[in-house]
Image (cartoon, rainbow, N blue to C red):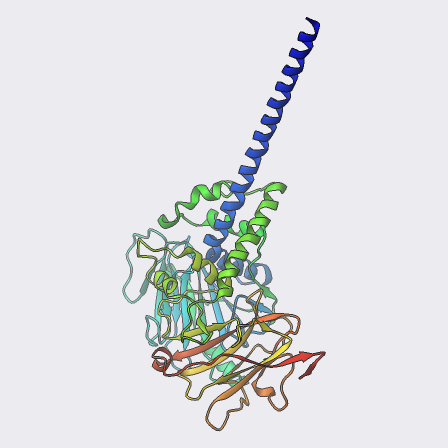
Length: 480
């Protein structure tokens, strides 16, 4: 009897231990599922939210590093140097930007006529959806114009004489490039003076506009590169709190709530969640990077240069995502890891080609020397340029004395047939300083070739930009 009782007790104990183990396993499994859910949804949130966070980072950098405020103008009084750490900025133009906000009512951005200068401008929402282009290739066609940005759901009357832009967000920005004839001091001063004719003011004060405030950010360390860590989600939370939900994005409401981002509520992740968000950000970065590294569809078969935005993305954004059967979120996410703004009429004022590998398919190495031969008769009304960017950050390479060479660069050397040989490397080939762009031997890099005022031979493929060729390896500072 006693033995039977002991045996029964042992069986009961074993059963209890098994139940405890199962409960622990279920608890562990439940915790794992919750963690995986946060990480999975945070990965998708980063890809989805990239354009808005990209814009918010620039706004926050402006507020943190300068005295400029929304509905004013921040500008760079000289072509930007490496301290402008926005994504792929143009160092062959004069930048004016206005981070606008229409929560208090409609806002006017007034562009001067193209007399004594011209603007290549884009006015975009916070999601970087283009509302309109400005300048000779924009809605005003070089005649100058008053672009009237209207808040979401605006029902008021639109006065005559304005170019009405119906925004679905309360905020956004205008990127207004004052075109340069050259890098000479006189031409730079002329472009700056022309850009300072831009006006920004509330519609309510249109009869007597107050003076527009301009803040010079040249030589300010203006770093708005994308942070691939948990801090990204704090920027995303700010977007959610400040902006209305768009109908096309309502599926993200619960997705974001599951990672702690919910309109009207504080975003205060605990240490465990921050670690999961860090991990998710790294995973999202790897996904986005893999797509970019593979390259977009090339402009000419057999040559590695590709347009900086794929056709499906350009079409979707320029039409306000009007097609109910298309929403290229993945490609949009990749696009806004590389640059900023949205262009309604891409290929009119400017066109961009990128390369992240040389002719042999190898990544560009800052310790090596490369040559690009720009063929004669480049199809541009204004200028072409080739710019070096950091492969990891997509910003200008830090601590470099220059970042580009252009057809408007001083002393640029031309070959007898009209072509131009450009060199990229840590040291200029002998006698080629005027055609050389320095690279950091410790960093990988990428190239962006701009065509301002592109002409038909680019698009009918009768003019082709060839691959970049590696011509030398650099060892210990000596080119061999």
